[in-house]
Length: 420
Image (cartoon, rainbow, N blue to C red):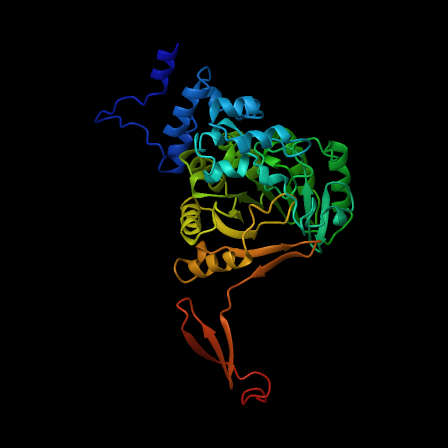
């Protein structure tokens, strides 16, 4: 059986008339002819070692990936060399935000190095249980701004629709750790969805609905379409957005059936939660290509994390990689002060230094907005390095990316141009 599986997975030998299928199909037409989801060598080796009974078809089935998530210490120890700190933290855990890692995403982690960037974001450590001043279970005050359960109405023209408490993987710095993964006080149901839909329909100022959670793309396709169709039927809702990490951690979920369904609800945008360049694999190249080819504009959202992506070099590599996948870098978030997140948070100056290291040194398309989502419900506040250096008479003094000063004529009130 293993020999048969090996043969099925091996590309046919190339001949002059029929070259082997490339790992990255070059065109939309090539991808349409390619029935199977691509599988990187790293994923293939991981599957053979840790899931030897799983076929290629199993591995590429997103439901199989969900059923076989790594969720307990025994499975972690079967796959990784678990440190004493990780082991104690997993055993100590209770309530929401459990361990949950898809086999595909686990294949990107180092098996032996507990300091591996992606591994650190998903396997608990003892620092998670240190609660520092200023931290909160709901640091953004979302519950305060929820007129009905699961719907946050903070900005005048848009709402955040929390569709589910389930994610395919659980990031340890999750802003909504209080409500995801079970074990908390939050529930999600169709009647709750309907209450949120009714609220949106009753408030004509709402023109933009962001679906988040949990992760909306973990919802079954027919059920997700039910929700999208009812939101699209509200006349004043102009466009829909989906916030998701699934194309990065469960790229097999981006099936052709899902994409065909999503494209029926344009204008539809998607924000992808991206953490590190190691996530930009052949599988992710395929999932993002399918979405982009369907006409869905893709933007990235990245949380700044200490020792994981907090250098200019790492961030530049990530942003350039995203652009090559047709994903526009959108937000770089200062890590929210969620309870137990101190070991992930950097000084704000780190984010400003990264923006300084990007702007002017690479294309502006690769420079995200650096923002703090203000604790207590203040919303997103952008931060920039200090490029405005003051005034000298009627001239504005500006500092460029090289630190040099330049003058811009700007008479302002009372200047020679002010009176006409």
